[in-house]
Length: 111
Image (cartoon, rainbow, N blue to C red; front, side, top):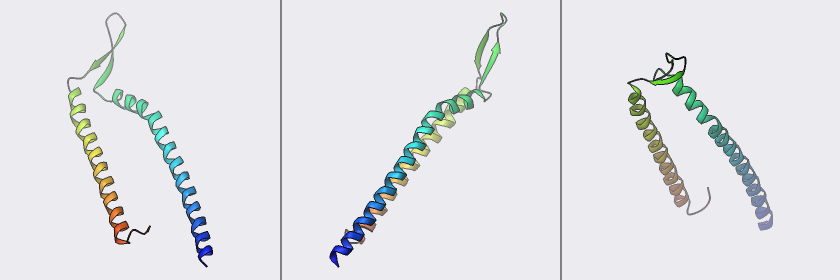
């Protein structure tokens, strides 16, 4: 019976490992797509605001003109970015602590 249980556990572990690899591949794909599209999305969003306009000079040339309120973008974007990163760090640490407590509560057994 021990061999049957060990065999069943082995099959289950291989199945879990396979699913974890598939999840990892999907996450890498999502990260890659995000990295590819984020710069263009940022540029188009920033240029689509009223903070930057394309103006025509008297000689017919074109130039970018920045609003006097450009600092509002920086003052709002930087704290929101920091808040997002801090929230993520808090969530990761909290999740890690919960997993550790579950592991210790189960007597070191994998739950």
